[in-house]
Image (cartoon, rainbow, N blue to C red; front, side, top):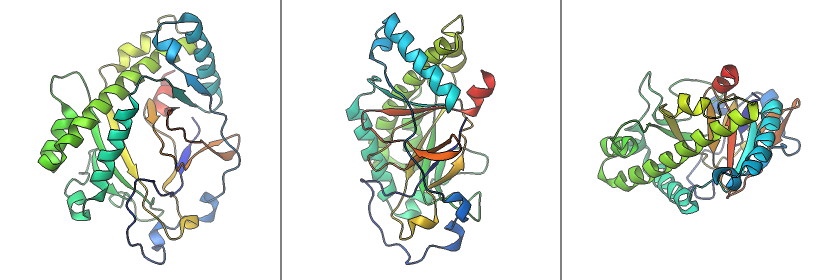
Length: 277
């Protein structure tokens, strides 16, 4: 599907730190990557209330919108999605807690070679130039076990100080996984798949990756990107944006913005789903 990027905007919850007066050269991107966005992406906003409550007519209506989005660029937003707003707010609070700790504490849970989870500062473990102006924390989630995978991850890596963080993200990941599985049902309907549960059976025991992105303040934001142009290699991405925004999608030969809505989740059809469909 079409690629996306994120500008180095400052999250409202972020802690402002001391930054160098000039951007280090390995964070500076070539000018061809720094083209301004023009216009807002036509990403339909789907009200999932009827679909989640078993209303066939409402389900068919949103399925048609999903089909239209998938044929054009692969992005849509969902509201009345069943995720408790207070849980989203708690997840933001716990994310802020982690990114506030001293850098040495964050580095203690750095990504290990060959693994997809852990802390990363600007992906310096993978690249030496065109670095993104961001920090990330990634961790796995799967629910085909009685073990609280996410809670155990935080307990084993960061200790008792982050016990509540693990509990919160365990609940958050569970809710997002359940929504993701429901969305595969909706996508099947939009594609005209005879068995609407076809994809659900494939994905419900799969592993998910939760990623928290933090974009620090930047003295020269016009020279860098928070996240460079990319396509998501996964099957389905569910993203919650804060109110600062910054997400852009390349569609119709130009970069376009995706306006943030606190009550909405952005859904992106990834490469794996695109190929498999």
